[in-house]
Length: 449
Image (cartoon, rainbow, N blue to C red; front, side, top):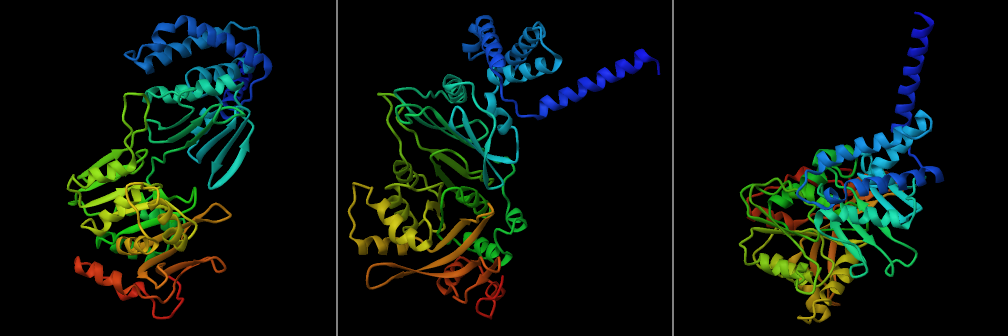
């Protein structure tokens, strides 16, 4: 190989190394790069002003043209090759993508992005939260990204609507705030949608549940047991509900009700309803309670409510106990006892059109809900089914009685059958032609499952 060929080979290797490095690294822009990006953004805005606001234009084709313009602008700057590639990446993510958070949206291992301030970003990875080095250039850059995210769903975060809940086209959930709601600056939280649906088998592989517990729940779903999934924030309630819903028979008429569409039921007879907040003076708000009531007139076999957090729980409980057995929902609670004796009664009181005594509340809950699945996130980020409980009825003090059938033992890191045989549930599923094998309930009390 000649000296010239060696130099050319060395140069190509150097360029390839720089390209790979810039592509992989998380870049925090310098002051000079921020200034250059601002100038490029101004150039793009001037050149494509009409196209950027025209919704009829093919956005993919427009983005490619913008990329070409950015590359030309960058190539004309008197800076090194690595600096050009850095600036090109920063400019493209700022103008076409979502700035410094684009790299985390592209990372399949990251499940949540939390922008606490323009200069303070955290991400959740495998159940753990980490602070990252990437930051937005300033408050204005963060607000521009927020409204760019919201533009496709015809929403905007402004002084009239300082809190916005929405979802991306891929199903990812968004919550954004700006002052005066968040006085220290705009915030943005993105809970990424997992395109790879969590299957029952995947829960077993992750040791989130035992085979006996999973089979028991499957039979409960098929046998029309009304189930409530309980857990704290980030325990995976909606994801678990989605997995359980996969066991629903294909010939049933199912209605899902959510604030933001997240459930991915594969059955052929599924109708999905979504709440609608007020976005203008002429638009009527449609809340969860209104949708649950409307669903009762739509001839559903079962109603699946993504999450109940207000007075809509009254309508749902009524549906569960009057002909819609096997319906399911989720709710925030730290334990099954907390769910039935505190959280649901509190939500029932939010329904101003009804009034219940404490005993009436307990009777209604005990009549409607048959099974509670409690989820928990362990310190290491792993999510587990910590309890599966049967609702037995009410006691003399007007409290709901529950008994634990299966439980997670933290000391032994195992799932155990408690010895409490769920006779009412076995009888219920039997009525619908479902038989539960005795092997689901080991003869030895506390036996591992």
